[in-house]
Image (cartoon, rainbow, N blue to C red; front, side):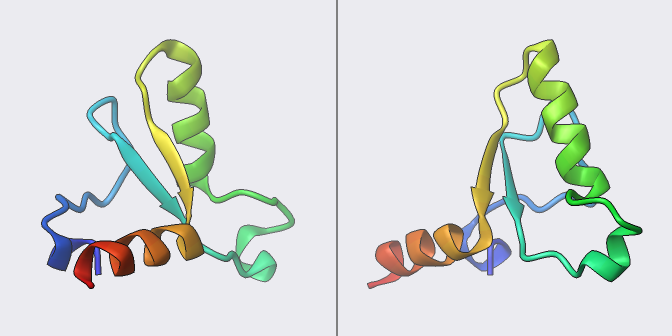
Length: 69
């Protein structure tokens, strides 16, 4: 969905990341944690300076829907 809207989609979170869409997580896959490794890395990087926006999956879908109408 993001790629179809012109977003550059990466496989990981880096200092160049500007937006991370945080999806609904299957807690069984997170080994008892509440956040994915990408989410945690984004939060860590934010503390060091890069401006990374965290957006819930539902909000991203609504936003994309708003621009495609």
